[in-house]
Image 1 (cartoon, rainbow, N blue to C red):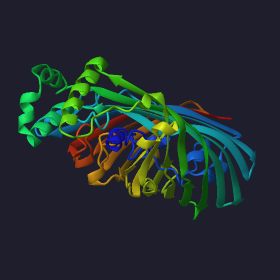
Image 2 (tube, helix red, strand yellow):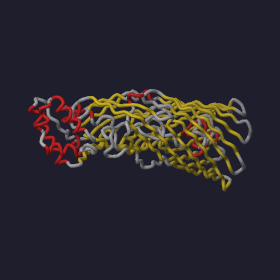
Image 3 (cartoon, rainbow, N blue to C red):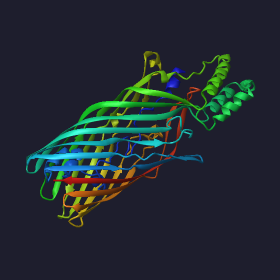
Image 4 (cartoon, rainbow, N blue to C red):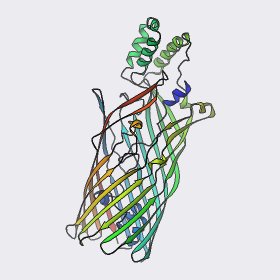
Amino acid sequence: MKKMIALACLAMLPFSYAAAEGYQVNAQSTKQAGMGHVGAAMKLGAESMHFNPAGLVFMDKSVDLSVGMSGVFATAKFKRDGYSVETDNTPSTPLYAYAGFKIYDNLAAGLMINTPYGSGITWGHDWAGAHLCQEISLKAFNIQPTVSWKIMDRLSVGAGLMMEFGNISLNRALIGPGAMGDMAEQMIAGNPMLGALIPEEMKQIIAKYDDASAASIQLKGNAGIRFGFNVGAMYDINEKFTVGLSYRSKVMARVKEGDIALDYTNEAELRGLLEKVNALMQAMGKEGIAIPPLDNGSFASELPLPDNWNLGITYRPTNRWTVSGEVQFVGWGAYKELDIRFSPSSLSQYDMKAAKKYKNSRIYRLGAQFAATNRLDVRLGTYFDESPVEDDYLNPETPSMDKLGITAGLSFRPLKDLSVDLAFSYVTGLGGRDGSYQDTELLTGMPRTFGGHYDTVALMPAIGLSYSF
């Protein structure tokens, strides 16, 4: 029973919903958002620190500054056998700031901060899948000092030290809607005579929770600073073609001492009900049910922020046109399982592991930029983002599916060295996705499967300013 109760806490630290697949956010530049977020083979000034550090050295001016933010307005829907529910998400606001400095003609350095991981999803306290996820919120930040060196006229390299940290909050029902009614039905099915022994008052209390979560748990934790690196190389084949390759390493995010809180719709009523249920179960020779005092302790866990390979090529057919294509390889295969450890030692009996079995995925990007006038650039882009989640591991905390993004943007320069950047992205799951997730029911200890059809859509406006001198 202890293990099955702990299963109610599994998948509660997955950092698992964001604007992109898995829990990665691709919103690190307003300009590049308009081009499908290409950039590995483009010379972007200070913003190259994220896409390919080798491009930083090609800054035109001594100082290049860029700041901006996006709004992620994402909605997910779930349907099953006539039942449907839609998320009520709070918009998230990933942001970025870059500062690049030209030291010599062949050497540049800079500092950036951005939010490569994070967002949130809110399904509600009492929906049918509350036992898997009620609400999740994740924010992860990256600070990166960077150096870029032009080895020769056509070849440059760059490297940055990534320092990543963040926090998470997630709510999940320990005893979700209908769980106690299901338990009563299974008990009666195993012993029909038991139905006559259940008092009417107990039946009425159980019925109250047919559409409500009786008990929920919240995990909140801060991940301390972890280090990684971002390296890249860029080569001009000729005046029209440039190729670029960059690599961002995996970082293990660790929560060492997270907070745990329990929430009850009516704690006194629930505990009184469990006492009566346990009396009946003991009379049948079965082990009783108890909710562990996890809120008297803390938890620790870790998960990978995956590595990324980015390979791109840029073509400049004329002085006014730029076209770039890119493939991003995301190392989601590093996320095999979730390990939750409780402390003090008296709670370690509830430690659990849950298989995730993510697979490596790819993102295909294509973008174009046209210099309409000396003051105005316009952009278009698209990308296809593969899901890293298998069908039988599809969880509402990660309503993951292959996604198509369509983007547009522009930059207007009211002053020669000042650019006002705007972009808009529309991201949709291609046809939605059917999938399921299996866990163990808290009260009965029986395996259960929750599945159905998921759809997702996200609207992502972005605004930025860049200035060089």
